[in-house]
Image (cartoon, rainbow, N blue to C red; front, side):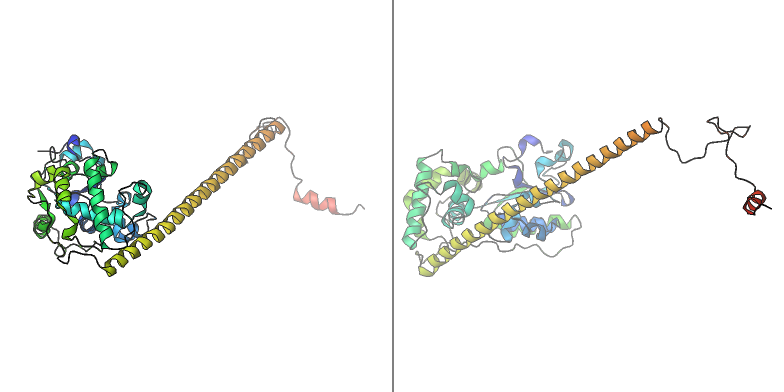
Length: 368
């Protein structure tokens, strides 16, 4: 069925339309989206250096791929006309998304955005009682994560849970109205790459086999201690639609670190990444201020040049009007006035003739 505008997901920037390849990716934050966006960017021949030059507060070059305004060859679905949008059909197009186990996704978002204190998140939520401390040990990490999940459960109106990093995945993908070729779990990414590559090659794509670049920099693997009975019960409530729609039966995620503790080296790495984030934020903000000042200076210079041009134009008009008054309104044409038949010019005056050459010579001779 052709796609309609009212079917699109709530976040316009989550859609990546690859018209040449008849494919569309709908991103879900904290579900391999950084790696998948780079895959799409490579297929679309987006320029990596364009992302790298961004003055955003992203902490690595890899993360700058999330600056949607820097994508120049991959439109959002909402930017398409109704006619072009209607050509997107899951029967012919490869329309896909990737989702993640809700509990694992929640801890990943909490760690990368809150525990590691990304600057924007500190500005927005750093004053909240559930915002994590800079940890001194592994116990601080566990306590602060449990406190955050408890607050999210007890306060349904908590603003951070509407942010796309924490919001339920079915809502983000509009699964109640949007048709997909397939929605893959992160554990099914190898199958996604096979299916997508087959679709591309049917459309004469000749690149190397598809693969994802590694993009995760979070230092702490999830451990069993994080997921207390209270946490698992809360996650089951908060993400009930995720569990129901995507077939996750157990709120306890897989792939846990059996050591069940965070040692001193891991906590030291958390502290290092927090300090790095603060320094990058300082530089990014200064760069943004300088860039803004430069744009203002350039705008003022253009305004001064435009004013000078208008002044010169006005002076030329004034000079032309003054000349017309002096010359009686005649327009200087640079052409000789034609002669009348009696030798007079059109102004009625006799033309002054030059004396003949022989007369000039005789005039120069002394009188006898």
